[in-house]
Length: 319
Figure 1 (cartoon, rainbow, N blue to C red):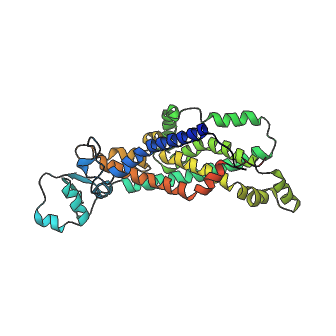
Figure 2 (tube, one colour):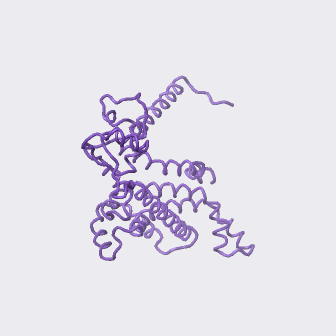
Figure 3 (cartoon, rainbow, N blue to C red):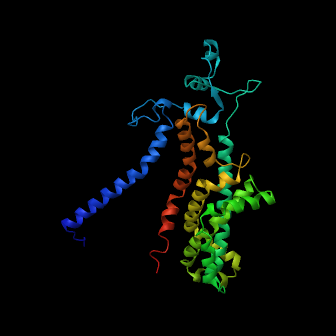
């Protein structure tokens, strides 16, 4: 039998839908601005009111991946014709691509910073989720003395703003030689994500009936075999949801990446704002770097969307 709704309830439902759509549009507006500015000509990046209709171009991405300097004089016709098509886009913007003495193009630091972000974010996510899952399994399945106090202590590490410990961590890292290294940031991001991973995974594992493991143990499985063959497949949705949140946290982290790194292990977040151009700030280049930086998180979340949705409702029905 269909539920009977009054006109007032229907009106409130429509109002709620409109409110959700408005809030969604407000949150998507900055993403649209970044994506559109990444393909705008430089002179249209900061127009008031914003330019909505324009001819897209890829010159911001060419400038993002190359080192460039201001042109003191326009290039000759021969030099302009001999240049590759992508270099002409830089010429048209009043700049030139910096080349070595042998004529080789000098690439910017963005590709290496982007790879640093991938290496550090993926490594710290795997470590945080792996150790968090094992720790959460121990708390969920075994009696641990002072469990409540230990869990609260683990959670308390998230209560302190990271910037508060930035200077002490910098001094300690410099003393042990971990400053400006991949492992330094991986350890740091893993430590900060581990408490979140433990708490989230404990909730997921608590929802898996212990009878599954007991039946496996009766059939001759060892505790580790039961964990890997029974618990992990059942907790896959929770692991995916936890991995998404840990990856986003590590991928977007700015303060530690700015303080703890200089060149070798620097990630993309502190590098992107430095690309202000050879003269006035070139917001199209910054927008292009930000747009590319958004893609891995969007792709990772999209690939795990089904697990993520199931993970968020894990245990909501089984009682």
